[in-house]
Image (cartoon, rainbow, N blue to C red):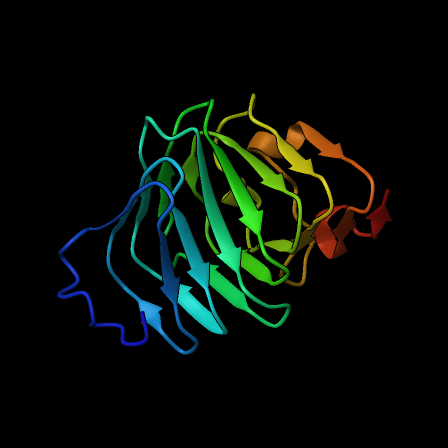
Length: 178
């Protein structure tokens, strides 16, 4: 999407189905609801922002938030729970070498897998609200944003760090690498 209004008015839901991708171009603020189905991808190319609610379908097992290059930044949310849905068996994968920023708290119900790139958290509740969920760093980076340390709630209490992964900045007030 190279024009924020290209898919119609803000009230219309854009559905991203399996094996399809909604790519938001640089400089775009996409301010409309997105229904993310199993296998679907929302990607940011350049500096892109998605301010509409992204609802992950309850039947989704795996969805992806992606970037295309190391300088890409996909920012999600401008209000609490702009990332919502899924179940305890849903996994959001972070793909690509760039950054996915979660600016606000979410009520996502599943787990996270970060095999590449960087997942940047703006607030403690950004990962969701399920304490039994998990975050798996299998080559990517988990990073806090802001001037003060974040105290994690939800899935961060179940954090798996594997080879070639790192945790940055205010997450634990130091950098940890495995």
